[in-house]
Image (tube, rainbow, N blue to C red):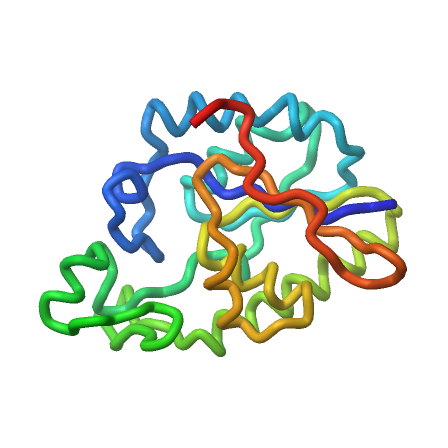
Length: 202
């Protein structure tokens, strides 16, 4: 049965230090590249018909490192990370100095500058619904697996929407860098069949 594979990009300097990284286009660290390469043998177990990737370079580079040779990758703007607006580049601790108790999933983000206008959770959920519709059509058309290479928060929202949950339930699904998740079905019900899979020990 065809499955939907989710890959979070490898480590960047900002992800390593916990800074909110929405549209800022950062490269992978050396460790991020190493761990992304280590995912390739896991991805080789699936018969991949289509791969969609966020156009941001940390995701695009991860796609180059993890996908089997010859896999066609299509850029998909709907897979870009949550636009964090004025909180772009800040850590949760920094935000809470001026906004005690702040929680991204509950409280959202304020608008930023022209490059980071910010998004509501509902807007991220709508993007994910559009991507899922395309991915589901590809799963049906090819009867083979589809890979989505993107970012932590957007993939968590996408997982919640796959399961028929509200976008806010993405808060329940921790997702590390350079990790693989597998979404599928059981008795016509959408399920998670593998989560936060990594080929190295903690």
